[in-house]
Length: 347
Image (cartoon, rainbow, N blue to C red; front, side, top):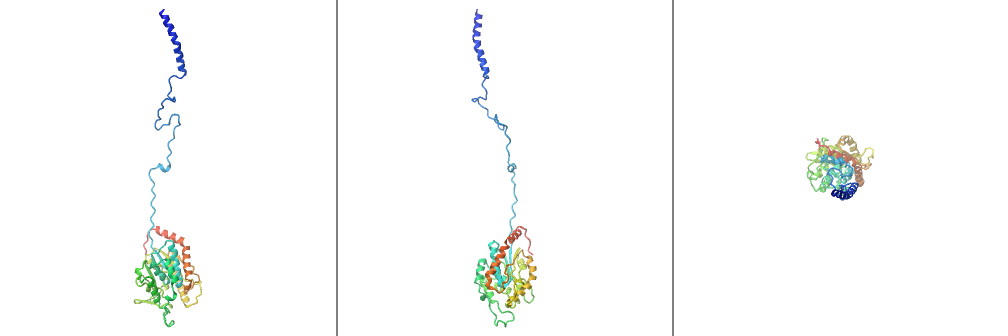
């Protein structure tokens, strides 16, 4: 009897338990870890998060791939090059030298050495004394031709020249404050010809005005100049454009200015023109050798300007400036190449 009651009671509880088990099985049993409320373990470093595609390795730019810096060799410094001006002779045509200097200065090219012949020695001395192109231009406009013309009396009684040249010497010495050549701001040389031997001589010391006077003593126009026991005449006879002497003064880059009269450019009329034309003819052969040693040769387009045409000084200065500006790209290119090249001993 007792056993029947126990079996009936067990059957009574068995049905609800079975139903509960079926319901639990239909719901998937125990709660899943991906339930919204279930904690999610953080992804392991270096691995993609659950449900995400595998990450590609980071791309390193080529420039950052090698940590070793690439060092560029430093540019070679431009060395100092001694620039020389070789200023040729040509009487009134020498005003063109001022235009040349003006154009060079405007482009930052300053001479370190100046050597001049005849008219070139006049401009060269004033420039070496520290006068810039603007000051030289003013001096040119203010120059009174009569102030440098001291006639030898009687005019045609002198066998050596109609002008003594003392006035020119005084003019130059006053313009340089009576400083001797060795006291000028730039190394300067004035080229003359020894009347006895015909040899060229360069004055690099002594009385500045006297050296310029000797360099400018055109035979038949100016009287020869005696210094010591030697007598000198115009340097244009032996060095119309003194390139060689400029090199001897230590110049490494030489800018030569040739203002000689071209023989076909004009017909000689006056006695001075005949003399200067003769100088040009003689100087052409010499210039063939002198000018080939220059780095740049500037020849201002002076055309038929006469050697005694002091009224055309403005035209001459403009011609010098124009010719120099036309060659400026070439001058700068050659000068840059010389500054980048190793130094070569000047012989």
